[in-house]
Amino acid sequence: MPGELNFSIKLKIIEPIATIVAETIWNPTQKTKRLDENTIELTANIPDLKEVARWVLSSAPYITVEEPYELRKIVNELAQQMVELNNLLK
Figure 1 (cartoon, rainbow, N blue to C red):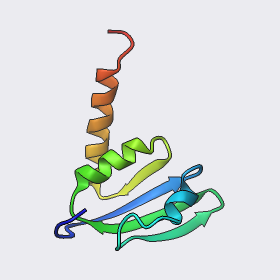
Figure 2: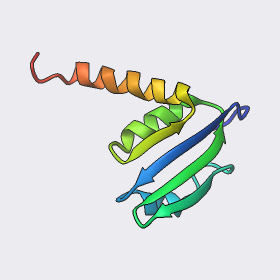
Figure 3: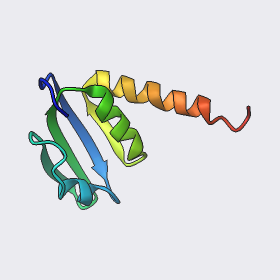
Figure 4: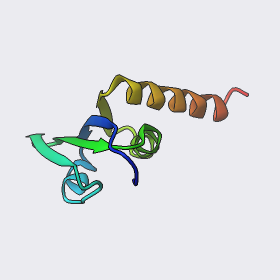
């Protein structure tokens, strides 16, 4: 993601993707910390919350957004749009 690093993020990631994320460089500022056998914490500084929100949703349900609140809000809004677009009761 090119651009000025305006946002600090903190994500909690569980298996089956935690190990893959921990072993892959997604962002040059990222740091990972193993919280337990099945969970890692990823922190990074990024320029665009919307791009990260799309990545979080593509990894659902294995990621929890811890910080910032703005990222949680974007993820929630995108998830709600997905529910509405894919509603089986339509």
